[in-house]
Image (cartoon, rainbow, N blue to C red; front, side, top):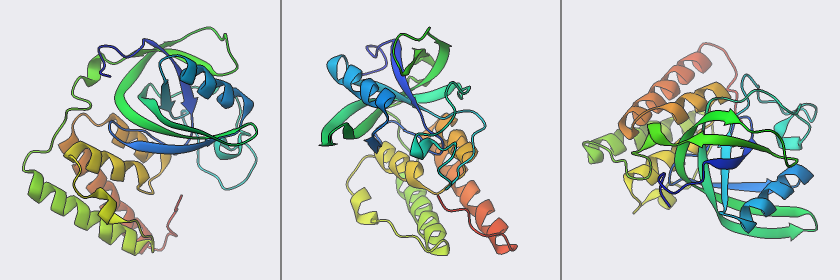
Length: 227
């Protein structure tokens, strides 16, 4: 499925601190009634859900006003750019609870939000600005990937975090860069910058810049804000 045949009107899942990128795979546990309805609606139609972050929301480990606990205020303003994904896996793990995997296809700009007809939100999506999504590649791929992966490893070691880097072998440039960019422990605003970056090469450079700045900030006496 390409941007040419993606539906114009799509349901959206607003979630702070979580982004989806083309060719990336996003696992989600769905338990809120409105998002269970969203998953069922998408599964019965074209399988498309848009991931988008609420504007100006912060990440918190407290259960109050928290997207992860389903307690966040409804109807918040959204960032203007999100990413459409297709339901590549749907499992009912318990009564009223789903485990799903969204596979990213193409980013979109929100043209408008449509009047509410379900418990979940829907928008009119404009995919036009992101025609390279799903078919992007790195220039000087070998050297760029080596520098990117080395920086990621150093950054995660600094934060005492581990990811299985072997799972990122033998995949295309876009899946490699976007999958790692999705899981890097960045602030919500930093993740939005990653999402909105034009090209894969620019995304690598921005991610490296953010990691470098964050390490310097943490070394100046601030505690790492891992999420």
